[in-house]
Image 1 (cartoon, helix red, strand yellow):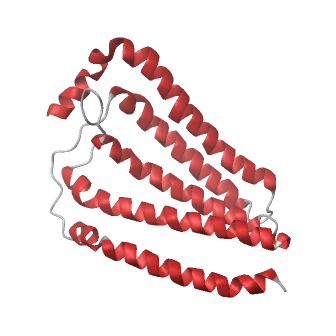
Image 2 (spheres, one colour):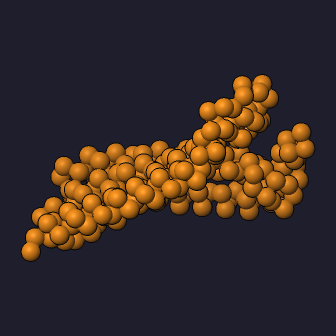
Image 3 (cartoon, helix red, strand yellow):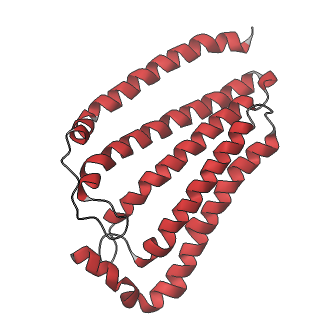
Length: 212
């Protein structure tokens, strides 16, 4: 029995179920989209860190968050399906995995972009919102992470023709190493040796933003 012949009806059934699930999720969030379409004009007052008006956080961000989560969920399913197909049909080499990985990394880049705005609502020991560490290290680092994710997605997408393992490893390793440096090592160093010795002075402008 050809595994691909077996996978065709299974893929159809899975696609149908995923379609129903996606429709159910989107319909549950229909108020977000309705409010987005009916939102008032943007206020002239913007947040001092990311430069977005209040209407963005009330109306646009919830829609972006729903779309980013939906895209990521679909990308994970596609990637897992590509792995299963590759295992059952070794003749396909790694082309399907390259395509699935490309979509997954792109979805993670979108998720990272939308996740930047969640920093404004995070609770900390002294106050809630963006801290010195977030403004100077975390937020710039997230741009590097997004760039590496998109670069990995491009590498994996180009590799869909050749299906070489080396390119897949590079596509995964590049954003992983970038996250390790920009998202873990550098923030930990700055938090320990720059912020903590003089925390109140570093955080005073951000406490003022929070009060305002």
